[in-house]
Length: 325
Image (cartoon, rainbow, N blue to C red; front, side, top):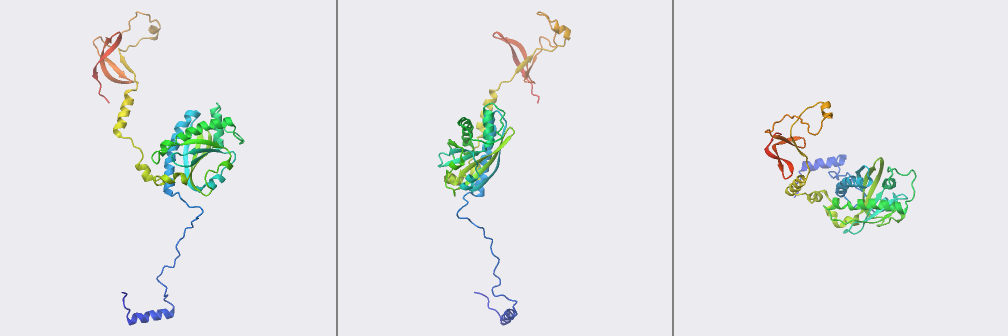
């Protein structure tokens, strides 16, 4: 129940009301709230968290491209993720030019296709490099021949197969390159108003630079969209067990070949004596018969040993180990 006003308080309110100093609607917040416009024709289904996670995934993918493509192109390749953004498929398709290189990738077991757009300049550079050239693009763009598309398809298949590892924390994929389109008019794979995420990467092959855009429709990621966040991505990232990793490293190190040599002794002779050495000549060294030999592993003195024989070969028997740093 509200407090009862006294007569003096009532008189003060009436006088303030008559003089205009008091507004009966006062006390209410008349400031208009900031309203954000929402376009129902273009609902933003990809949040900033989703786009940020896609950047992390494709940064891993970029490292794999930088490592594996030089094997095929015999050229230094640098790949960097520029940014990711949400846009309708119509906006993506309208930005395409002719001719264009579009790899249509089946994102199995997820339903739908992902589009990988490769800059035509990079395509010409790849063709030139694969045919033994220096990897220079054409001065003027033209249509790709069937032979050139077959060459590019080999590289696009490699790029498609490399998608498996970066995505395994979200979904175990079996991506397949279905075909390559060179005409943007035939690039209508989803409805124009479908929201997509576009990840832009800059690829540098030698001195040639160009962009690769990966267009992922929301319908493809919708079944696993809850996994496309940094928290889930980090928590499910496969981390090798320290013990297993140590065993693998030890096994690999044990198979490594290292040079081992035993030094019988050292001596210094003149160049003239060296030139006139004949079979049967004797070179005096600075060690005695009963002295132990120094055994080097690589360039590090590691053991002392005595000379001997094993079967029909010379051998040394380890007597002590040097423990110096």
